[in-house]
Image 1 (cartoon, rainbow, N blue to C red):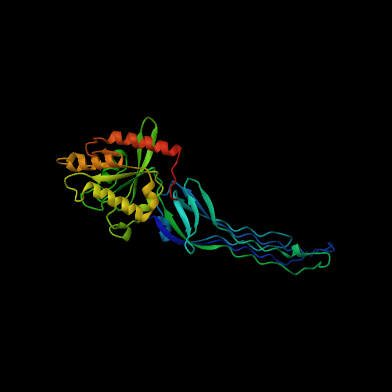
Image 2: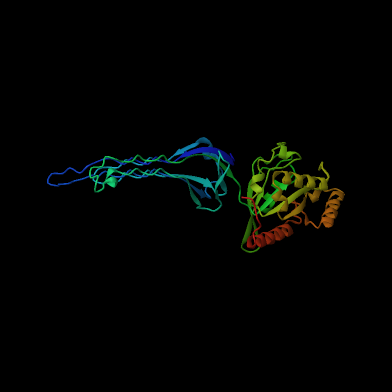
Length: 341
């Protein structure tokens, strides 16, 4: 099961109390105060790992609590520090404070680590309060409470290229033809219910990652169809491919389909419409008289958009598309465009 958003609570450990103690040993005059400090509470730590691809585990365990610090002891002994709790998340997880909406951390690389809730400080023992005028202090401090937060975790897939298109535009077929990914493919709408990632090899030793985003429809920003729940996964992509079905079986006109997609992206986040993109005319092997393809190509020439006619079934035009997209990704990696995090 693919889970890309969860809400959890975390609580760091409470600091241990300092104690009030006095040294009392035979033949040791003027023993004085020797109360030790309490140990600090444990922290709640989040770390990113490529071993995880979903937030599924956090759906079933929604509360994480670190260990409290131990109280101090006599002979100036400091209490043991509480053990940290480490929660492993998929790479690409964004951590928000659920109460304020503040972004606390964005784990974008394997091994990224952040302390999300700090443990309380241990209290001081009475040995800290001895002075020349107060040689028998009876004062000691209690430990402080650790931080407690309610969090919203949001997973945004990390990919170089995002595939955007209407249901049955051929996104799953294209990513299967370009990479080793094997998404579900069928001849009915909304076949893809979760985002899919595929690694595309090009050139001698180079590659880029493509994300197949479940299909949009008109009104998706209002919650129609699958809504916009998966559009967060293209926020990190540097390059977009708009897939347009130009076969004779498509219900929408190609230009209308493209303009609706751009409107839905703008309704979700205007920044996505400023992302570099290209148009891919799909299913050209069943395009009939190819009037729809000619209409789309004419529209692209007028607007100076790049258009690539392809057939994933016969692989016509696929190698040229991979080569152009690979070069575009390489260029954007050297001078990365601004993406929403």
